Amino acid sequence: MSTPTSEPPALRPPEAGSNKYSRGKVLVIGGTMAGAAHLCAQAAMRSGASYVELATEDPQIQPPYAMVQRSWNADLLKDDRVGAIAIGPGLEDDAFGRKKVEAALASETAVVLDAGALTTLLSIGLTALKSDHPRVLTPHEDEFARLFGEIGGDRAAAALHAAKQSGATVLLKGSATVIASPDGRVLTMPPASPWLATAGTGDVLTGVIATMLAQAAWHGFDTLEAVRSGCWFHARAAELAGPALIADDLLWSLKRAVAKA
Image (cartoon, rainbow, N blue to C red; front, side, top):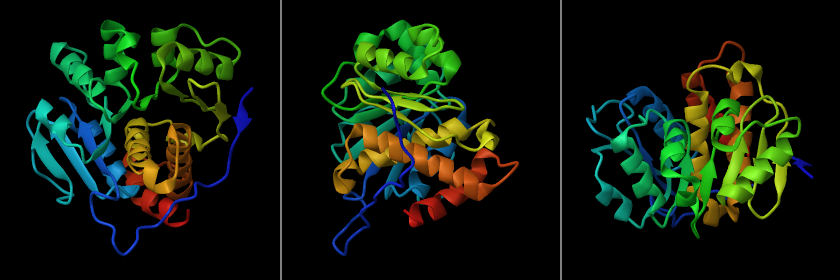
């Protein structure tokens, strides 16, 4: 049975002794579609991550300059200060993209997979998700169907089956968003603004979830609550952005959403 949830996340604010590593470092691994990865990385920053690193093949240094932009190298995954990895926005489904996903999944770090990273799982296989560390999948309905089969009439049951099959926490996006944990818990989020049905908003959501995972220990969140919190802030940012929003608008309203938590 799914549990409806609408309570704002309970965030623990920074303390006097906090630093840029204690507040959550996020590594975003991008691909050839630079805009999607930039949206993801900036969303991680605007939702509270204090150090965000964007790794792409050909980094073109551009604002915000507070975002660290590097050439992709698997050695970046060896930094034990990284609290979460976001991979998929802007990532191509080719041999190089698959190698990036395999490297991320082999790390001992929380990983959020979206977009291109989800597509690579069709080739890599769901067994690559098995880990003692959090793995989060964020498919929309078509991506979900390609990975796990048709959803059917019970979204909660479908998401839970996928979570148990994959060993990952599954966020099934849509007008009725469902989050399922491999341990059997299922949450149903309230309907979000239909104006979120526009390009790039999923990339933003991935960045926010990565921040919540990177800060999970600080806030006292488990994986399910970190994902729920990311969804809540994403939906609240959309409310603040208002009608006819584009994904870039969410970056500015995220700060206000987090400030009110």
